[in-house]
Image 1 (cartoon, rainbow, N blue to C red):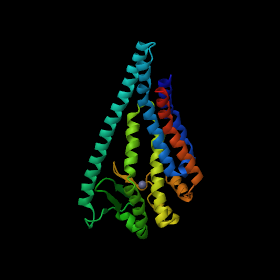
Image 2 (spheres, protein in one colour):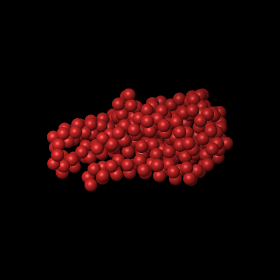
Image 3 (cartoon, protein in one colour):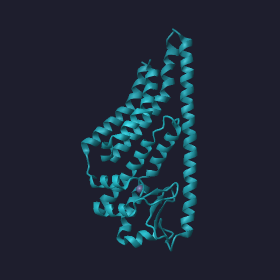
Image 4 (cartoon, rainbow, N blue to C red):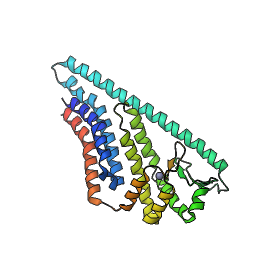
Length: 284
Ligand SMILES: [Zn+2]
């Protein structure tokens, strides 16, 4: 039965597929295509779960045999789809609200305690000796760097800003928020924290590549080493987050890989097409 195939597909996309993808380090070599693939896996899993009920409907409407049996399956499938949708909406609302509140509070705080700054710019410098840099995304975004960054590497402050500007410009926070919502929607035993870690790493790799394009590999490496392990408040995106060793390796190999990217895009589109094709088959 097609509805059963859709449920199996949803389970496969929620359980083994993300675990296998998180282990396949080849995805890291093309971060943009890899992030697209991660989005498609996630969306395809949701589509498959939500399409289970509509796939049973034709059996109830058009198939005269075993109507009651099919009706019970339809009700169960509709309950599963409804539960999934409700969990998605609740997680989306609570995570989005939590992030906005945290960032607004921290933005107000840095605006008060930052050293002399031009209120027309979004860069704030904190009087702290430890090098740290992070951004607070949102409509009134901020790039926050410590005095330690300026003292330790005056010409390098620009590189830090290139990385943070890439996060803000491309709204990487929305991407991370999307995956956080899905992560929270999935029941805890099925959740794949390796997938969440991988997505965060890919987002950092993408911002590092923007930095490489602007200031070159050597300067990006220096900034990464200086900020290794630096901390940032909740809701912010830290320049030093993720494994520095892995990020340095990705900076070194930051060359375009067109064939690999094309394969990843084809894989992604295939993933989205699969549940839609199964649903279309159920109605033919
Ligand atoms: Zn970053």
